[in-house]
Length: 227
Image (cartoon, rainbow, N blue to C red):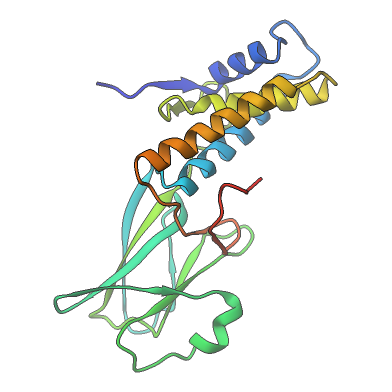
């Protein structure tokens, strides 16, 4: 059975209905698309921080004895966990951040490696591994894939089990704010939808991911209070 999907344009139409602005020209088509784009991003981050991931994948980092910074896949958003195998042991690698680099950058002669996600504006993310991986060493990285880029109203967005209404609500609220309309009812519904995600995650015994995200290079713990 094929997964349900929507186009960005269909989500825009839903948002216009919620905002009671179906026939209004006050907000341009590009603005509506931007509202949906931002709403989808907020929803996606909300879901993955709850542990309700819909897009996970894995890639391997293989050492060559000299490379320190290893490129991530194009769809990389954040690390879930990195592991390496030594004999019969599978070891979970410790993450470190820029503030800890003096402690870890010159790490040598240890049983396991450490890593951090490095980000630079306009460049692909890289994963720095210390000590340097030898040619015989490989690290496996489980990661969250980024959500689809929305450029056109015809771009297709896979359904997230009905949670896409949160993205639509975000868009409708932004439109209402610009029009100086009351958005209290929409905000209340958004709060209720967000609460339902939390309840669904609790019901399925899911734990929030401790993700190192590409955008900041820092680790997120408390996704419930994220804006």
